[in-house]
Length: 135
Image (cartoon, rainbow, N blue to C red):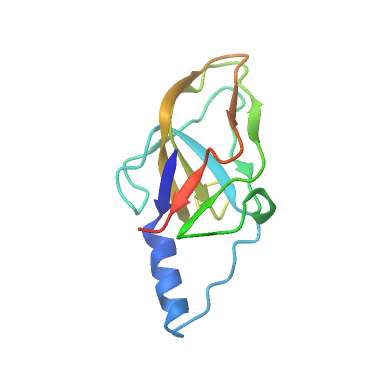
């Protein structure tokens, strides 16, 4: 799965890089799953999972390896809670936000192979499976 920075983060990085304003690191980033991946770098067009015990999960900096060659990937396996009560649907995308609900999208991407998350299933990402690049 390859993702990229969202427009919000791109603008913050540019302003930080030229000395206009510093960008405060998100204190607790949250990983979200989508049945329809966002269609724009501003986060619009996406449909986030919203049923069956689904919730965004914290995905702190310790879950990520060091950036190299303009890319960064998860350095630990990442696992959501088990779907219960209702199916989550066919997960096609992911995003990292600066809030547990709503908030600004920091990065996003589509999953390589969409997967149905039904009651009893657990959405998981193996080490290195979330790969984000600057483009």
